[in-house]
Length: 187
Ligand SMILES: *[C@@H]1O[C@H](CO)[C@@H](O)[C@H](O)[C@H]1NC(C)=O
Ligand SMILES: *[C@@H]1O[C@H](CO)[C@@H](O)[C@H](O)[C@H]1NC(C)=O
Image (cartoon, rainbow, N blue to C red):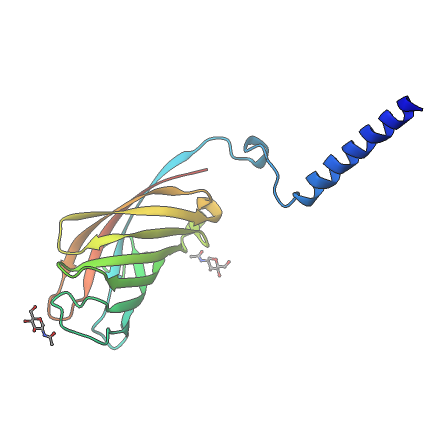
């Protein structure tokens, strides 16, 4: 009798544990190898970013201006961009993707942009893959480094950094060509 009771209690305890485990089954551990995530690769991407503000067909447009404007840095101004990325500084050279996102004047003491961009690639095996860039861009300093915080498809689990260097900027139109070197770890 006591033995049976003991068995019953153990069985109930196991059931309880099982049902608890089940209620938490929204997450589970996986083996990275079994998912095909074996070896991280380091990829270097090089392209030119064309930010065209003054044109019949601008690729970047201001979307908000702050209510209070008394700033030499246009603090608070936000632009939306869909900027072509090409292999050479010439805009008519091969297109490899587009930088789609927002840049906003986030500094009151220098021209310093908050950059929130998806680099959306369209070339070869990278077609349809993206990298997400989030960083601080003081556009009048030499080489700016910005983190790559993630990616999709070929760039799943991506992390790395982008180095941006102004190739040319026209201070009348504010149109700029920026050279990008991106270093990214991914599988
Ligand atoms: C704008 O900024 C200048 C310099 O900081 C200051 O002297 C002036 O009072 C400000 N104007 C307004 C309207 O806030
Ligand atoms: C990229 O993929 C899209 C959709 O599959 C396709 O329409 C497009 O032609 C491809 N672009 C290049 C450059 O291969």
